[in-house]
Length: 169
Image 1 (tube, rainbow, N blue to C red):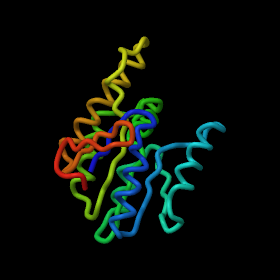
Image 2: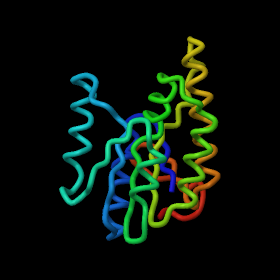
Image 3: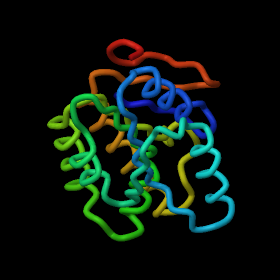
């Protein structure tokens, strides 16, 4: 499942609720790194929202490996979020195309519930810088690839889910 939306659209809380309500063992694959006080506060807000029974795996740039290790029958894996994963890869000059293919392939082959959170960044103004435009374009391609492989895709706006593909969950 892919849960898309803009900043503060409710996508993470919605995805967390889906996993919690599944009754499966919950694994949170975190892609954020607490590089500054503001990001550390955001991470703590997300962590505080989750039940303590969730297991957290920090994988800022190795989501495919974490998914391969953590996904399985009886488990629900939430990857939050693909946008930060992409940022981490771009900053490390990673091969975005091959890593996207590997991520989609790994997700397809995995068992259990897999929920991915990602930002929809293509609805606003054209970014002013070349890096911003490359990021926006790469994010759009990543979202399309994951949505194409997903059974369910939900777009969040103002905390409300709009089902784009499949059922709500």
